[in-house]
Image: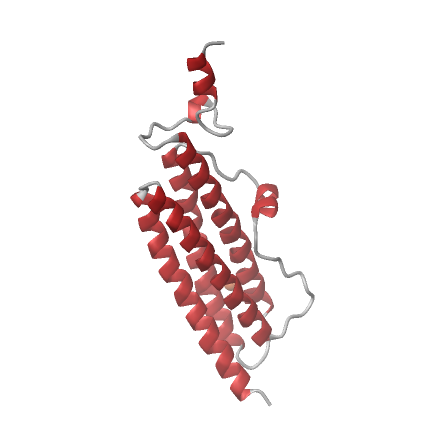
Length: 181
Ligand SMILES: [Fe+2]
């Protein structure tokens, strides 16, 4: 096997030649940014489902407001998934194929409790969104290091949206706390 063939084999992590999207970015940059985006994608799916879970199971006197807010947030989170996955493909990486892969890659914790008090739901989602914003900032730094302004621009929008969710969850949970008996 020639050196050129070896170099070609190592060009991208686990990418079929048929899926090797042309790019001027280095294989190292594609591998690192793809790995980072795939973790963000897994967390987006996990947070989407947790937010829906709480939308479905929230209870109490603020039911309507929380039910609606969590539905809006879940839709906004779900809308990021296609963009994250397609960004990986634009770079020449491969992305998530199954719920099983989501479970392996996600860094936020599932919540399968039978009952979660409403304020705890909001606080838990607030912490998850803070965690994801921090991870997005790290991914953005990686993009800057590799001059990947396409991914960086996408992440800037998503960071702002994530911080908006954190703000809403913070204010809604604070009101619940101050009104609690
Ligand atoms: Fe619904």
